[in-house]
Length: 217
Image (cartoon, rainbow, N blue to C red; front, top):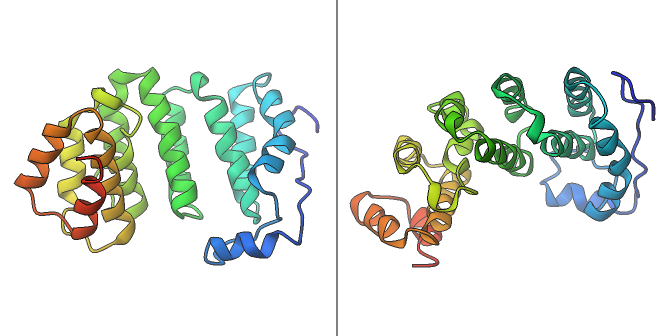
């Protein structure tokens, strides 16, 4: 691998493992056949090299990897974005927004959500700005980001933002949205059970969302 703007890197997969991985993802993506520990081991030199190059180069690597067909390369792109999260500014997050709606499925979207969540932990004053990047989007995956954005915030959840995100999709008949609503409420119930209980008593939510939200209550 050369440390320049063009990333010369190829995974070495196991074709015997690839079909099962593809089936798990509903055959939406081509897989090379790298289970997570193997992929992470092979990714390590790229991640380490990314800390030594300019951010414009890291962006180029992420975009190039995301464009490749095998799913493992999107995972590496996501790992690069997370590995460098302390280096990002709001302008970088705006650039990353485009990838949420590219090759979208729960695995990539939730990893982007984790990256954005770690970013707002480092820049809490920008939480509302990040939220607004995705709020009321016509794309369900971007709206899932608004619902799950604060999963890592523990007791620091901005309940106004969470309420806005949930109520916008209160009646949306989409599994991944309703699952996200329940997930976000369940997570916050670890720190504010009374607030979550009152929320459930105040607003009519889907059976799926209520069931998920109530697990720890």
